[in-house]
Structures are given as structure tokens and as C-alpha cells.
Image (cartoon, rainbow over all chains, first blue to last red; front, top):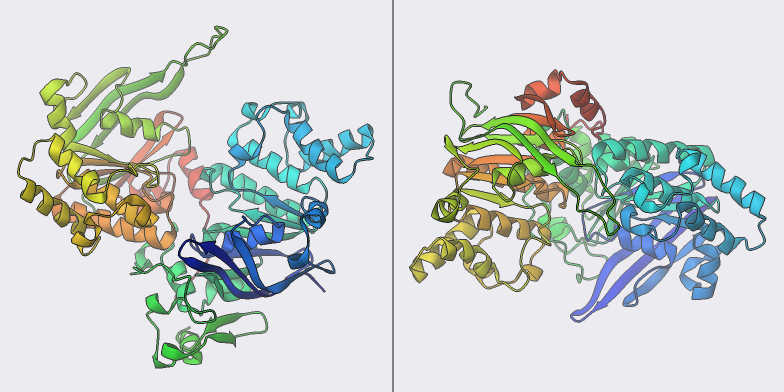
Length: 327
Length: 275
């Protein structure tokens, strides 16, 4: 059974210029202990999904429809009090800017203890210390640094503390929103390897959000590609990266620079940013789509299966199929 | 094709440049050690090159860029632009230098003044450098906007930064930097805040500007893949030392310094064949 099952979820933000639909009718299932990656550009709705799963949407956001089944509960209907018992305990989050996520006036171990005590008020001091030691061990911070203040840590160490904090209550699901974006490449590499090893060892479900496809590829087994609030393609890492079908996925992968592909990088000509006010259900990539056909003009995109795990959202089966022929 | 020619002399060069920062004494007079951001580095960049400076945070790469545009002064060492010493410039000579050397900053959300319209932002250097005629100034701004791909130029003229996307803002920052047609531009991680699809378009723009105006760029980045794509030559900087300088191709294919090897190893990648 899936750990997390999202069905037809739509989320909008009320703005002065009317309702903006940041997430449009998305569905996905996350298996127990699986790492799943969400990749897309800024404004594609990936962070909104993360915030929804943590019950941390800002005041002007509205869940317009859909269900989020997690551990037998529908997260959409939870009240703020009910959220308090889920957040941090069953679902935890690793935030983007680790530098700012720690309180500078408390020692790091006290900050992690706070997370544990909140959910287990009757835990004994010995057990608490024991747990802290385990957590620091897990994220590979030497024991003699436990009582330090955040400013005595490097950026990478702070991010490790944030990971330890997320793991403190042994959550079933961790949401990591751009956890390495503020770090440089060498530290990023260490953090990603660490996160992946811990995720495998503890068999936690992981939702990993990033704009960097290579980072997502290094951690996740299943990939969802998002554009303009819609998931446009989903599949295993291998399926999405080695035979991408959706025109947007191909644009995204084609414009990514790595050390060995600079001869074949294609420069996309995407002038329009996605129109988030577009009618729900219509293809939001169409204004930028090079493959758009007559069928697309007034069609409604639907999921086209490529394999039992791989599918793409498009109006025209021909477009998705054509890439198949080309491969 | 590389724009590097071993026979040519440098456009701008640094000789034995050292930069120290002295941390201010704390409230309780605590003594902290000096920070050596750059340690006797030599660097020479030729006209028309896009030169990459690659390193991780704290390596001194931004300090090097700031010294080259004279936002800061070196503690020791000499910087020359076309053979002329830059270190002690002041007054009119400094003003002329400023028109020849420009900088593009990392974060387009912070580097543009939100109170100034796009036109005012780009006009400012023209006014400072005394381009007198209003009409010709306006024309120059529109022309520059179109060069950086903000088309049509008139439609961006009176807009404000908050009305633009991150990629468009960075284009405005580039327009501001090139409006005086400088000889040398330092671009400090200009795309690290932007998405891959936008970043690659900006790389194309920088190459286009180099090819059209013959401008020389120093491209500062932590992303080796980007440096390889964009640059003719690359210098790898580590803890204030330049550890390796070579053509981009050679640095990636046959790195010599252990740090360069490490840097290559940790570049995230994924296997994706277009076939």
C-alpha cells in the first residue's frame, strides 16, 4: 500500500488579480520507503506541494480540491491542532536555507531535543541524550561538536543538523525542499550522498524537490517533472532521464549542462512563463511547445501510458509516440 | 573554436596580487587572525576571451573579480589594464577606467534598484559618463535592451524590476553593464539563481555580446560544466591560490591538480543520451 496518495489535488493562491492556480489537478502515489523527486522551474508549484504536505501553506492559499491520503488520514481535512501532531513527527521537512533555519542563540543539541520533547513529553533525559548521539552519528557530526552554537558550524554541518532534526522523531515521510541549493558543489555532494544513505537505511519515504535535475537524479528513484502547476511526466529515474517523452522534459534535459554533453546542448526559446490563470485542465506548456499539433489546439491533455510506471500528460498521443519512434 | 591565442598580450592582468581582510576587533577586543582571501595570484586575460574562474565558496573567486573592477584595492601586487597600472587611479582617470570595466552581479533580485525604472537603471551610467544628448541616450538604451534580447525595447523602457522575471532582470543587469560598451566585464555567478533553461539562454547572450562587440568577460562560477560550455580558458582557484589554468577542454579532460580532479568528481550529472 502506498504511504502517501495524492489524488486530483489543486491549490490556488488568492492574489489581487484573481485566483492563481499554482497546482492544477495532480495525482501521485509514493510507496513506503521510496524516494521520489519533483523537478521543475521556479514557479512550477513544486514548493507549494511540499508546503501542502507539511500543512504550512500561507494564508492566501486555498486547497481547491482533491485528497491527500497519508497513513489512513486525509491531510486536506486536518485542523491546525491535528496538524501539530503530524508535523515533525510523521512528516518532517528539510528546508532550503539551512543557514537561516537554526536559531542562533540556542545550542544545536537543544534545538533537536526540542523537536523530540514536543512529540514525546515523557521521554527520560538518558534516552534523550542517547537519541541525540544516534542522530549526530547518523549525520556524521563528531560527538564533541554537539553542544556548539550554530555559528560555530560550517554551512554543510548546519544542513546536517537540519537533516538530523528532520529525522529526530523517526518520521515516515521526509520532504526535502532544495536542501543543497545554497551549498557549493563539494558540500552538496557530501550532503546528497549522506541523505541518500540515511534514506535507504531508515527506509523513510522521501519527497525531494529541486530545480536541478542532476541533483534529483542522484537521490531519487521515481521522478515527477512539473511545469506550470501540472505534473507533465512521471516515471522511474531511468525512464524519465533516458527516454523522456514530454516535450517539456526534453527541453529541460536538453538545456542542462553537464561535463560531457556541451556539444549537444540545445538552447530553448521559451519566452512565455506559464500562465497560471489558464483554465484548469488545459495544457499549460502549449504556448512554448515546439511539438504542438492541431490536436493540441483545443484538446484537453490526458495521461498517456508508456509503460506501467512511465506516463506523460499530453493532448496528442502522436507527440508522445513520435519520440518513441525516434529513440 | 577558442579565442585564446598564446601569442597575444593580455587585456587585463594581475601580478602577485594578494588580498588580506583584517577582521574588525570585537567588542571585547578579541584578536582574530587575518583572512588571506587571495595569495599572490597571477592572472592574465586576453581581449575577446571569456575567461572562467572556478572554485567553491570561500575560494577567493569573487574577491578576484572585485579587485579587477576596482571595487576593492589589493593589499599587495599589481593590476594592469592594457599595460596601464590600475592600482593608484583616481579622479578623471578612475572615471574613465570605470567606463571600461563593468560588473554583473549574482542576484538579479538584489542588484537592481526597485525604485528605478529599467530605463533609469540603464541610463545612469550614460549620464554619469556624460553622454549629453537626451535623444541619443534614449536610443542607446532601447538599442541595448534589444541587444540583450528584451524585445521590443520600448515595451521594457518604462517598466520596473518587480514586473520582470528573474531571467529578464538579469538581462537588464547585463544591459546596464554593457551600455557603455566597456572592454572588460566581470560576471559573478550571473546564472546561479536562475533555472537551467534560462541560464543557457543567458550563456548564448554573453557569447553573442562577445562576438558582436569584442568584449572580454571574466565568468566567475562554481559550476565547471557551465565554465566548460562558455569559456575559452578556465582557472581553478582554491583557498586563494590559482591551482591550474588551461583551456576549458584540457582542464576537464586531463586535470592536473588534485583539487581540480575532486571538483570534476563531485559535479552532479545524469546519464541522458539523446540518440
